[in-house]
Image (tube, rainbow over all chains, first blue to last red; front, side):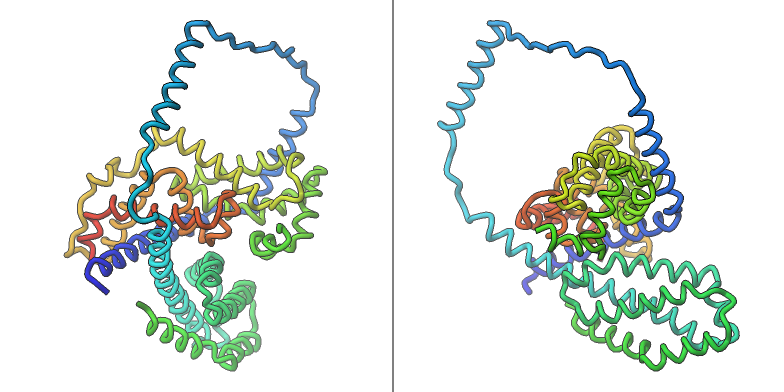
Length: 234
Length: 198
């Protein structure tokens, strides 16, 4: 890659990194909204507005609005329009230089590559965080696993990862990263299940989930996919 | 056409379920409206938040979008893509509010991109990342309207080019072209900062 292309590549990557940081702000803000209450509030407001609107009101009779051009103004406007049309046709020059379409297409591919690289980095980040969380659970004593799941910080991490995955789905599909999508889907299902388990989870139930994670080789598969993605990064 | 794009566009909701929900909302079914709102409120929030970068404004906009949808649902034709229609409503409201609020809205520092201090090589990564985010946020504000919308939909809403094209009712080629122009413009705006933050 020539130095200019390298610089362009690095700049595009930094812009995408910045965009990822903006996204994290959105995720943090989303975590603080009570979505169920919001939808109920909206429904109440919508129905109450409809009731208000359907109550009988006396409508004001419509007055016809007639715009009458004064002769002097109409003449000046007509002259301006004709003059502008003449100038347009007289001064119009044929386009010169290379067709913009090809340059845009080539650069779009360049940006697509930069985006693919950003998606891989994001997936690696998701895998790292997921692995850390699953490790905490797998390595815990089954009798304490319920407490670990209900710990505020773990619950926040789980919720954050579920949201992150939801936002990653389109990117994984667009980047045709089917293998990564498949494993991330499995991790997501595991987090959904873990987030639904109450703190009253029995030691047997915790041990069953721990065994399931081990039997499915989830941690190993995460590690392998992470290595694969890191190795193929540009 | 709507049959093939709805499953993905509606986030996995089968088209017949969505059509049923829309019909029920049209007949004034409150529960159906709550369900429809729950399906899409977060997507609209993300779009609104990327415009305003303020939770309260984004929540207000979510409310306004769904109130507008409820008000206009009778005029929605079932042959159209519901999500595209909804995004059209949301985008228009975002742009209206954005224009109105740009004057009064002040950034944390009130500085323009050019006035922000350049990233310092000696600062820790976290500080540089937050600088980059601040510079990008201000630069995005200076993009042309359509470029900004597409950049935000692509990178914050995580929408694909085709999904954006459907939502904005433009071609995928136009989306790609505007996206490319947005990145090129951002690069120009952010150049001094990009140069130092490696």
